[in-house]
Length: 509
Ligand code: 6LW
Image (cartoon, rainbow, N blue to C red; front, side, top):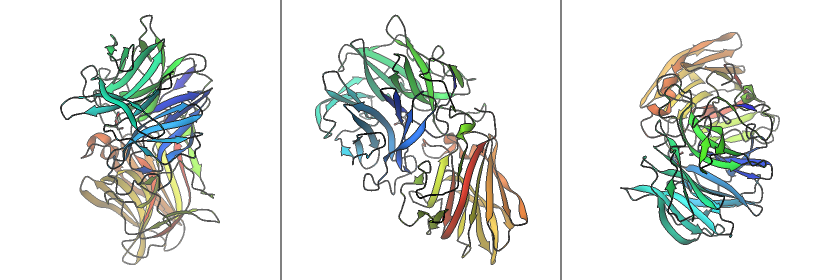
């Protein structure tokens, strides 16, 4: 059966997957976005529906004042005895923790803390009931994978940690997962860093504690030497078998905007069929390579296959809740993001701008999922001052964003286009609009630029554009792991958004 990659386009990194019966469950990283740890459900591995979030209550995990690309890293999802477990790291304050739920839909517990360093915690439940936790670890000089025995209910470490692997020599051994197959323990890890040297390597041993021998075909997956493949940086994966006994890998990858190594869509989730050689080592994808179009024995035929136009969406903010596809920065503060009883999304902004680090502006956004799309909104906003603004934004993080917004200049209502790159901020265009009336704003995205358009009453036109290269991960001044969000926001005032939509107008992938 044919399917398209990525299976979760746009910012959906560090996928982890498990299966219960014939349903697959997947979790991805969310960093400083709230709600955190998006959870997905699928029957055929290529059509995924958002089931909810592992972190959705402010009391569960405080992400306020979290730096951009800090917060929640690389969850692992597993099911055991009717309970779901997620092991995850909040990298600055909480450290490693486990949350549990009776169903993917929740309710998810408060975190149980694990007194252990490292990131990328993964749970492995052995047949004898022993629960293991492996994480990446580093003493500042050498880095590796550490294994412990854990009580997953209390987080207590019962044995270990013991370093069980230092990988195959690539930098940053990380993202470990252990599986048992034919009586052997397989350790899957990533090495080479999450950038263009990223790779997946496999090791196996007769005991979870090792000693582990390396797969002679390592890396089992890497695009580091496939310069022309439109998918790069593949790594950080997790294996699952389906009910028919076929094996699959989900992993992250990026699609650079062109031959230059820049990407704006974030690290996305990809799927590859896995077979096992006669030597008992895995073979991933097409001879160790992923493609945008692939074939494999899917558990069911692809229906929408998220990569295509099914990524299109339209939200009329009919309520009563804001759909869970929308994310905010660090928190949903009371009175800031509200649904109106008669319909509409009300954003009430204080003085928090989009450029303020570690802050929580009145913002909601969704990951940009395709290179060429049109993102729209219509809203009513009466700016009270020149500092009052509301509009539409292509947002990478507080240091990189382009926005078109309604504000006031010399008493008149206007729309500005502003660009913020590194420590430079400039208003690139200002147009006058009628004093009253609903404003329509839209962004047309492409590999080259973000073009901004407006309409209000008789007034309409293009405001200008910002280069896509300015919103790419590789260009950020600190290490970043996210992607562009297309969002709505308000600073100093109350803006009522009537609707928002996004349409993929390009090739399906
Ligand atoms: C994560 C690590 C990684 O902890 O990136 O690509 C880090 N892999 O495993 C952040 O997502």
